[in-house]
Image (cartoon, rainbow, N blue to C red; front, side, top):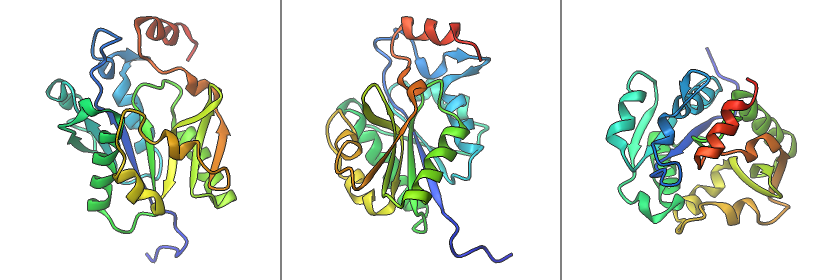
Length: 204
């Protein structure tokens, strides 16, 4: 079958390298609605047209990796995860670029946002196709954040990031470049036991 010339190809990077120090246990493996958080995030990406799906591990990678063993994802370890989120972004984007030079964009998502779903991804992609903007970001808590979709033009900048804030400057930069989608449910990310209790108390 000949694929349409305008097919939009994007890969996904799921960031899951943190040490979960505030949670006190590996939040990547905490169950929610019967699935570990990291599996929920990966399943959302796999249910979308994203390919490949890259999962970036760091702290405690050896404990998390077996949970992903049967899933069709590329698992990579970031040996410099302690430097901050930027180092994991670099690792993920570099892996995507090595896998395929034909990608039009990259979806960047976190493993600890319970509201992240395949519908979230569809909304981000639809907004990009409608607006033509090179970055589409979820907006919550009065700023833009992950998950976000970056066109290929931003890959070099993502691969050169440093520091703890990741792509925050790009996501909250030139409004002529960035489209923001109001997705307030994504404001809940699970960093503490109280966050986890709140997520468990919410209806499915």
